[in-house]
Length: 103
Image 1 (cartoon, helix red, strand yellow):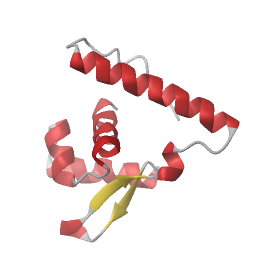
Image 2: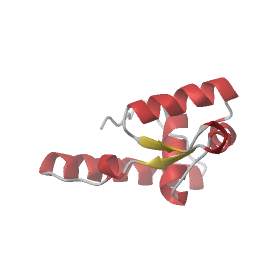
Image 3: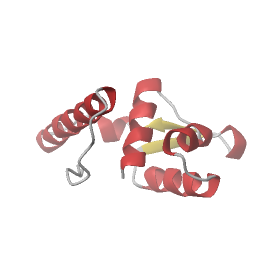
């Protein structure tokens, strides 16, 4: 789960991500990176653009932009968790994996 969060945070910050970006961020093999990215596309978190070698993954705006009260609350919780993760990494603190965020 944490490698997915790192990849999503990278894609949100830069606007896009590639399989090689994901492999560098998470330290997984090419096969695992492809499988994880496909899972995130199928879940609607990322959108795939392009074909095989030139494929990039961009954050799905429908997933990250709230359009009703429930999604606004989920979006706020997501941002709070994302900020906590970023602060934990920047201050070299450990992230508690028990605090999972489900959208």
